[in-house]
Amino acid sequence: MPIIVNLDIMLEKRGMKSNELADMVGITTANLSILKTGKARAIRFSTLEAICEALECQPGDILEFIKD
Amino acid sequence: MKDHTKILSIVTYVVILTSVSILLNELREFNFEQFKEFQSWALTADKNAPWWTSENALQWSYYAISAGLFFWRGYLIYGFTYFLSILKEIEKGNYFSDKNISSFKKVGNIFIGYAINVFILKMILAAVEGSRFVAMEQLKEGFSLLIPAGLAFYILAEIFKQAQANQVDNELTI
Image (cartoon, chains in turn brown, blue):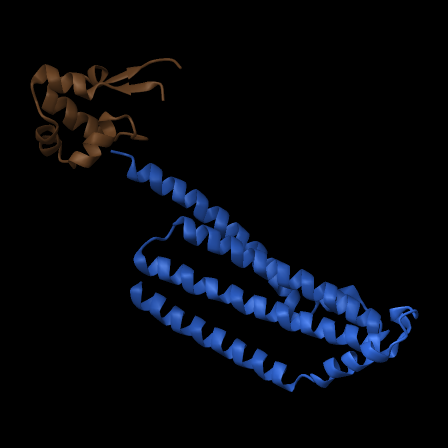
């Protein structure tokens, strides 16, 4: 998929752990792992909003488009 | 839902048991002496004579076709057992499982296979008996309804396949 999820990079920048982010966003660590590994088929605006709020970043910092 | 599937399972069991008992009863009433007649005919038959000229051979054909009809009815009853497997999956909450999709396809195959084979056997039977075979009249009989029923199960299998894909999409939407 040409959409790359850069959650790992943002988590490292903020010095945050996956389970902390999952708690803040209100999703399970399993679902966060699906998102991090790029296995997710779609992301809800509400989830994206919660992630951006927790990581204090823009959607573009998390999602990146790379042409196949 | 669980209660409904239980009721449906009981109804399916009743249908299967009733069908099996009817089939066994008809098998019991079927004239198996015919088979012995064939054996004695096979011993005394003129090996050089063409088989279709012998009256006993025609009787044997009749027997074989009747046995074929019994076999296909048994096959149809076997098809009903897939409903139990579907209901079991639904009870577990696996509505769009691979097992259900394949069961729907198998039921469709069995229904259509049964209808086509019975149609062919009845056509051969009419030829053996020397009676008139009218295809349109045969299609008015109950078994021909299994063709649209089988097609409906193919459609259900496709719908469930699509629903399974949608379910995966939904589960992977974070």
